[in-house]
Length: 344
Image (cartoon, rainbow, N blue to C red; front, side, top):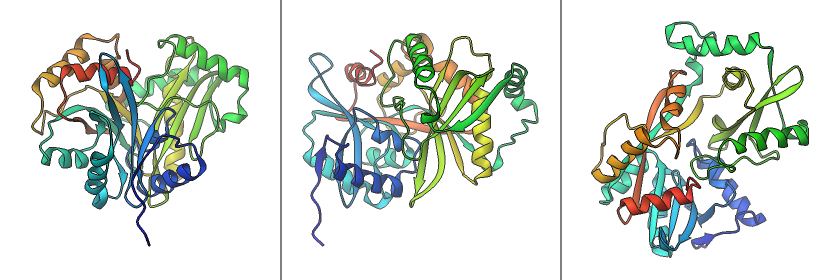
């Protein structure tokens, strides 16, 4: 069989390209960010035999005058093919700078071994579903018990279904109100923007109070060899007056459902810049200082501390997340990254 050539694929919604991406995603998309590789606005470097990289391309007169590709998560490829896929990408891409964002330790090992500085970027909170105590016994779950009990006392009811089962008007109102409190738009890259229509293998849970839609949670699948092994809690929406504990009631309901189905993992997602493990690779110390400063002093960019505090209450394990750049990152590049993520 003749080997297909690599290509930069921008129209990933075209039928052939989408089928190629989907085939690779369901085979190799085991990381929490894998499904985010299909998010709106993403472009793709595709090698039909090896796999693909998803990235957000930006060009900005100040932050990225020669272009920047912000690669989202780990390569979608078999571990044995990652280095060859990286080589193919580096040989063909025209971007002056590539940032690899929210990558795991396996790919970070590859980049560090090639001499690229790798900085810690945060932690991903992972729940091993088979061992999670849904009864929430013990002191470690006291916050979750209180939030769940409050939601139940307020008459919150949680349901699972397809988005098409929700009224278009009530769903639109929920989305508009939430976005209005979050700067008017979704972030990109680190979270997959909410698509207001049903998507393949995505799960939807919502909460009502006396029939009124209060909150919605979206769970993206993670795959291994064509099988769904777990989910990422990717997106949430909640009305401002939703009782405290509503979102947690949804997540706990989803955990119970995933447990019953024999799923392995629920990822609560990335807590950006929660640098708890120490830098394990040769890295840029100035970038590490900037991350720590943003974490502690810049909640207007992202509420980093509140994010990690809440996820810790689920008592999952924390997996370090990393960031690297080719060429090496500097502070100026960070502004370009924030621009790509729509945080600026």
